[in-house]
Image (cartoon, rainbow, N blue to C red; front, side, top):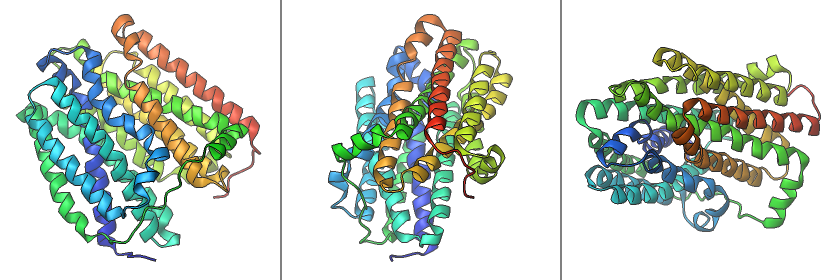
Length: 389
């Protein structure tokens, strides 16, 4: 059933790293854009928001395009465009040009990620699919950290344009590497059916699960996006390298992803494990109220551990519950996730700009409290029994 060699999968993982790097590269240096182009904080935030927004609708509506195109053709074309736009981004001279480029890039990223996931599912042997997907998720986590960290370091050393130019060149090279993929792998995609969507949402379990993941990524995206501005407020001379290094806590996602079974074994069932993750996430958010870089650096590890614990367990729980309609359930889950991230990257800015960091964090804690309540309702809607490990 398709080619199962290791080299194509390695290229897929590398492509995932570069793509996620592109998604988050602007996040830690948004204060730099604000200063250079005389922007408001909210205008600067759009560099990340526009990249993330298409991911909120792509899992449900991209199927009409993707069904007819092979994974290799689609991912190579999208990577080529993404790389070329990164180079153009590094050369652009005004805010609106930069924003337009980021918006177009945001349309490319869902096509790339969907293609990569499809390729992994199609070409991996059945007994290896779960492991291959786990490695893919670890690659996206690595890309999230490297994109933030390297853009911060390169901005300090060479200016912000250097990293985006190099990333563009690397993506063009990745386009060549992707030539090793099998040609005839078609995306296995399910078009959205309104009746099926409504039936799924009327299920008491999913009715609470999808809003819960919306709330969780809303908070994560909000803090990650506004943190660089707060660090600059605490110390205007703070360098971008330090901001990028703060995201090292993101690596906790890898630790969580390889210990999911142990976490479930300890917590006895999925809802209790998810609520434990949200509780840790809540604690990590509180730590950020101490406006000190060393404390925030430590808090990032707690914050990320709680987020990835809740996220990874919710994802697995959705797949466990959706026995007959996994594709649709996963599509709605991913849409809920990125819609939360898109709105979280922008809307809480009102509280940050007009009421300050503490009120901003208080609002995020309220959203996490809602996530805890929603998960508790899920607990009451399912049969609580030890998960099969």
